Length: 406
Image (cartoon, rainbow, N blue to C red; front, side):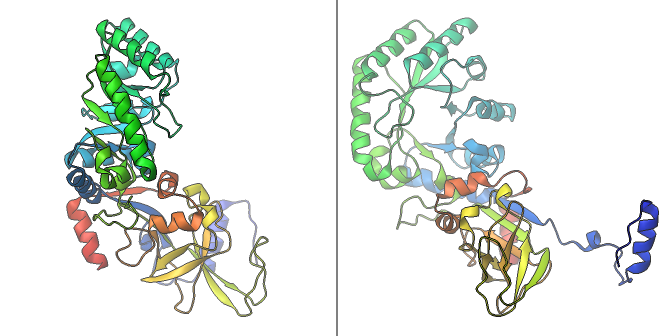
């Protein structure tokens, strides 16, 4: 029987007399931990940085944009810098300024801006600004003139990827403008850079070398020339030049298919079973998935969904690990929750559910989830939003957690 009352004190009294005492005062007292958590192993970030730097043999720019691929921009930046990174890379001005506000003094490149953006904050914060068009370069120079200082600039050329950057046809006039502004003391051309696709790296590198040659004959002497991402930096030696930009590799995803250089996943996403549901034979579990089972089965409810960054596209294909065993997700991944099939071994309330981690204990990895969702690991990482609390492990803490789970 359900009793509806207006007086909350009466309701508390009714509930107190209707629930038997079992020796525990409140469920919150016995709760083992949060219902969902992201654990970031900063020691893994550090090791990955050192591995990439050792393999590449040139300085590393740690790409920490998009909140450090969802890992936390400032903690990742500090871990990478402590283990060999010489640069940080971000897309937007706000990210660069946040790093400076967090005490980061290392060189930073910020590369994605509107042509009419106010660049004064970046210039004052001693951030290298990417310029990929005449409009960008003129805008940066105007802000430098306003401040009475010299702006640090890196010119970007489009070598074929079709993103930002000056086209090869416009490159000669772009370089001449940059050289004139440099002579006037408004800009210092610190670098020239581009993006590439590792599968077509040879052609990208050839175009980049031609662009560098022209810049050299025009009088530019950039200190930092870079085109390599994680995959090219590890797999295409000719692309390394003066710097390798480590993005996905920094976070532990092997970027070169079929080659394992010892990178370790730094993010583990876990939840807990917060509910159990018995489905009857033939019952329709979801309007979009007709029931096919002819027997009863138990499902466990996990309080994570696509509003947390768990991709809906992975519904019914994705797997999680509970008690050392894989369990398939059931039906659609919803906004705040999804269900898992208990299977023959069953699940219990409070059981830890590992969505993905490094994979060394049999749990799914971010690459598994990317495959199930038909996307790339970058999107999975970046989608894991702030609704899930983060916990950061130092070197010592990571070793303790590893030993506890062994």
